[in-house]
Image (cartoon, rainbow, N blue to C red; front, side, top):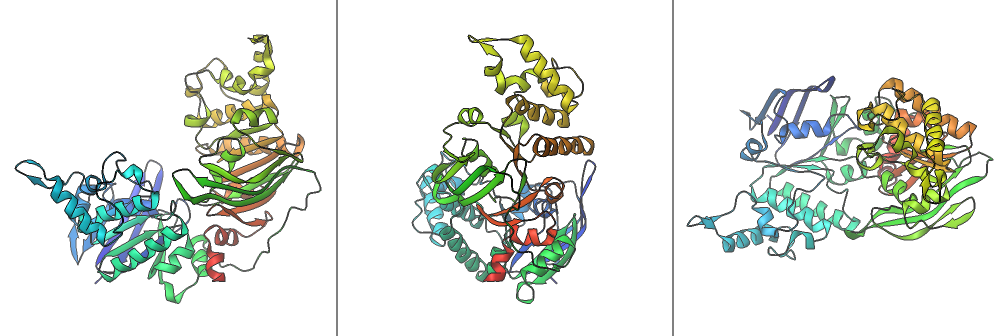
Length: 508
């Protein structure tokens, strides 16, 4: 009988069956990977085990005995700790205070800080003796903050440790250090459940792999008895029948956007590269799709090209129509003819307190202004033209944009760049949260902008069907690098092999 068993786990969200009677088991002292494409159900299954979701069907057993896990508190009581990708630390508290947050040792009714520091030092000694229990967490690099999260879990005497994409913010050296710690945990009898998109990591550290697809368990295999291609085939439901060689663009149109060796360093962790020597070309009238999984660097690339890098650009060259450029701000990019539709339209795209019409004209106000006065009639004509071209509903530019549907909000964002008439249009997850009908309309319009009006379009998506629907050429990203340049008829499983780093595991 397995140490951990999850039987017939079913989880429903409104209109979505996220997990469908999933059976999962893990042995004591093993490192067990849970893999699958985006939306496969990996994180949902682990959140049930960690107590984040209480409304699920099925049962959980530890050492053969049923346990009730309907809250994080009940999970901790059962010896289950979770380290999420987004670290749950309080930056202005000390390392010791974070490790024992909510469980502080007391003496005579007061927090015993001396004992807390001593206990924290004991736990940290097994991980990294250089971490000072009295240091503020914000003073530590990301890799050491990750170790503090692990120390917190160990201080709770966790028998099962869930790690969700644990290396996404780590450097290569920090990743190797984490591997050593995981091996020590395994030797000490701790079960590690490892959720990752990176197959190279999975094959380096894990004992077994469970594959989920569309909310169902496909199977469990031993790492020693399989290979990355076989795992990818389980993830997509098909065997990899052929190798596809990397293919440069065959378009004869002149290049509009050229990027050479673009590197971006994480401001919070200077040893971590968010982008690593990215080189690409987008030609006039071409739609280039960037596919990558979580943490691949898709959004960081587009933001950097728009003059708003989420880090520090340390090297690289960007050319627009053959001329070297360096955008110091999004305003510089807009003036040069580059537009960006961001991933999160409500947070970084739209101004929700403004009307839909004013959201459309926002970036183009200099075009409608004379002597610092906006020519309202000219602005209104341009807004109505955008409404008609994209069929924005309802046809009421004076309506607050927050009251529009997701699809029409996305059309408003696209309309903004119509008025500017960019040479390059950057799209980050262009149809996220959009219904099927609006998605088809957006696809048709994006194709029209590229193929009829000659705009160079570079878009990023985590959904392969969208990449296949739009792209003339597909770039695959993995850990901040472009690892493949492929034609649009490339098999899905081959693209996923690149995106998961499986090609690296095969090579090694």
